[in-house]
Length: 219
Image 1: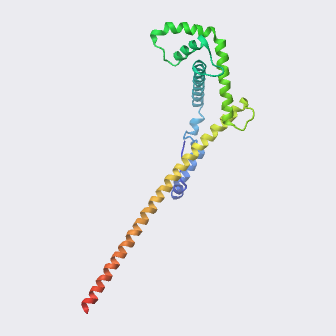
Image 2 (image 1 turned 60 degrees about the vertical axis):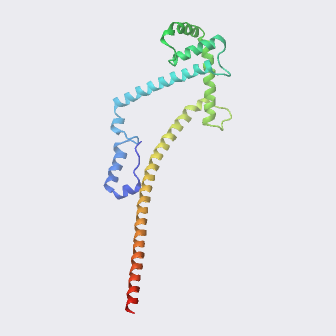
Image 3 (image 1 turned 180 degrees about the vertical axis):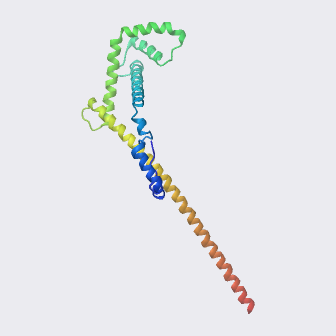
């Protein structure tokens, strides 16, 4: 994110304000990336590849979590009996928790797992459907009947709100820093004023006593 300078700083530095306006309007995106770079074909291509890789990785993680849930979890949709134990071993392998020396034993369980893949698929599908419905209710508690088709739009809207909130938070941090700086300046001025008043009182008191002593001496 590219934080917004506080208004006081811009007002005190008009040349910087012009530079800032040019940068943020014509040259740099809100995220602090050069606009020319952001529109560069190669850059866009690399970003699309990274996005695709992240998406594939996310799908694998979701699937691994689902297998783990139906293998170890309780409730509707979970696996039972020997297939449950087999799925637990496969899930452990997917999580990298199986020793290399046990690979032969695990391979037998993997084959058993694959031979019952349809049963596993149904269990995983049921688990994921439950999660989708729960997510719908979390995103919109007012829905009488959760509608999974609304999820993409809701998630995108939520992401936009989060990005805007992050931006606003950065702006508020700058404003807070400016306010604290001004508060420190005001506090310093207050202390200086208090010291001057004390000095004046002390000097006035000393002068008054000096004059009084001189008056008594004249008598």
